[in-house]
Length: 415
Image (cartoon, rainbow, N blue to C red; front, top):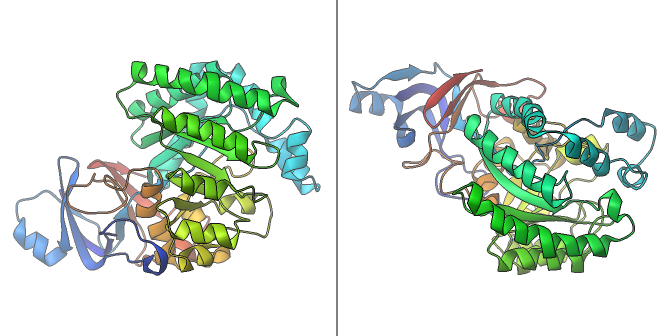
């Protein structure tokens, strides 16, 4: 099919963008995109492509914006229950760590998730995935981490693999057994760390190829005060790396423990959160291929004033991406458009920078940039049509879904 007469087609051709180059949209006015067999064949001006392919089935988008589907590279989309009561506690002055230490936070979601059947887990997650897709995200990363035992963590992965087959969007799984310390290991973080690297990760290495032909999932760890210290994080990630797993890390959300340097040293795909990252660590990111993933919905959800130092990361030459951090405690947000709006306001990105950070750079953070994140010949035909006349409405507007149509692998979904 030939999509034509777009006010703007945003191609973002040329791969991930770093440093001062962030924001090159590869924009075509009055643009067109040719799709065949679920892949991008060609982009160009409407007049040229209409003349070149006169017999092609056509979709006239009548002055709207066409761009790659969003890629959300950091979510905790799979869980059971909710934590609405904690939202009220935070409004009363309790901090995230105080709630966590009192048995709330991640641990409360763990109990609900452990109690859920596979069907219940899938049904609750499916509703969120449908909302994610309707808001224009066509590929997302999804972490486990609300099981915190081998059985439930593997059940979550099974649910994600099945949902990936059943829902139109692509799901890239991440194993996050090291998300928090479960109640049965209270006061014994070292003991739980041993369980993660000695039992859970080897069990995952054995389980995974028996259930899917997909390459190994990412392995992640929450390197933070109240979770896992630097040495524990290193042990978990190095064990995973030796077994062939690609790596990610949660780092510098509340305290700078050295997680970014660890991510760079281990060549992790991304380091995520990065709110209190030091200048030295920012410099290390800029000299590496580890993607800095900012999660602006999280400080917003926590009513905090500090956000990822995006300008410093770009000045250092880093690769910057944005994500929603969709989760039940701090950022129940399925909308990458809203993440872009926050990034513009609080991280001082321009709309074009936020768009690139939420597409090709986000794809790089999950190892998918050769397949999605831009509109280039040979790539998967994942596009969104937005009912706006200009791309700058992304970031400028918020609280409204601007997506009119999602096209996933060439298949049209009206929103």
